[in-house]
Length: 271
Image (cartoon, rainbow, N blue to C red; front, side):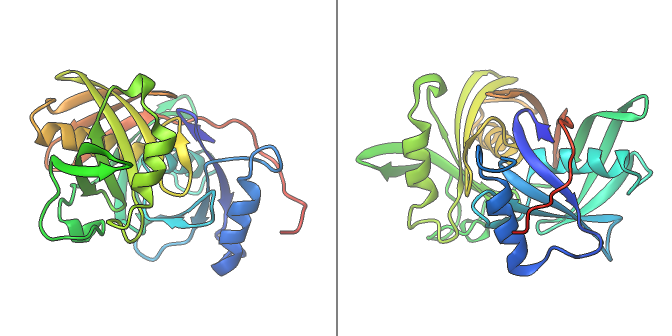
């Protein structure tokens, strides 16, 4: 499945046959492009004691992520269309807490999903990031160049900087910021450009994946940072490499966008 080209392998794991270190190894094996199925990550559908269903997310490098905005839209579509949930509004347990989702249907199929992404946490400790207090529009030097960055958590860490995205060396600077010592658990990096008060462009370097065609939490983080700096309003369309996402800012962030099923199959190879 994919959300604007941010693609995931979704597996029903309610029998708990995939757990522990095996989940990490499976993600690394299945997500390797050209040599396997290929994806940005692996999503496991799990039982939950606090919500109708639980989502576990493993990046292509085998690391487990707390939350993913594109992933949860794919996950929610999968759960509804496979009868795991029967409501068009329900909650999903994640490592970043319970997230509410609302499904829009076209017949029996889910055409789009809106997600309650929660409120951003601006404390450095929430990412975590070295230092105290907030990091809002501060100087950050990488590879001899200084960028103005704003850092926040949406259940997972984000560092946002505003640049001309079209010709920016995302693969170089993204990797350097992701692995910078200021971020003990690494970070996602958003390279944003404001077009107007309700429109932005964005490229995202995802922790554990590299640059992806879209990132839901990264989109929300970029809009939240831009709004805090007075660059955009409260309803913003964000153009990513894979397509557009919409973000509404209030007490919480609401993310809306499409999710698509590409194909399904069965795995026979032992990992």
